Amino acid sequence: MPTATISGNEYPVYSDVQTADAYLAASLARSAWAALSDDEKAIRLVEATRALDRQRWKSGYQTFAERESIVDIVNASIVIAGSLAGEDADESILTGEASGPIKRLKAASVEIEYHQTAASSAPRGVLPANVLAMIGAYLVNGGMQGVKRSIGGVFAGGTDGISTATQPWGFSKGI
Image (cartoon, rainbow, N blue to C red):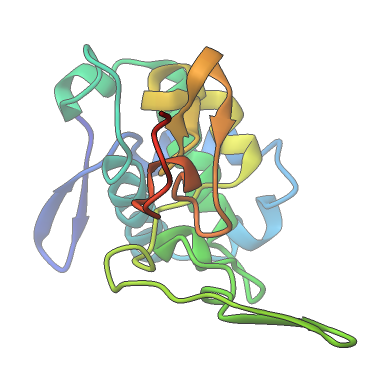
């Protein structure tokens, strides 16, 4: 199991710094990544590992030990770490919120306001599309976090990632 040492502490990671250096050498993030110290790179690899560990994995990939040998998962952690390098790093990957939840939308005379519970507005750990393309096959619902399956395999999702079909709105179940 690869580890990263930061301030004398060992942390489990999917990729070590040397492997990440080699992978990101052929990436658009190469300049920003190369400018980081080894400790700064290790911190980003730890954060990337934590972001991946928060996902809902299919059976057979639910433990770190099961995931660490999957090349796509290792590469996804490197891509996330690389995206955290540089001044314009997108740290929303770590929280799952790009700009916070939408509370109100207004267009002309039409206005929609969303009311959410604390649980439904919690960060979902949303990953970038390129990372989901790499690891989606290993995730529950193919990486569509927070989305429930509906009849016939169709996805039904509200604006906050929760299925609108599962809300108890008191609709009649028929006669």
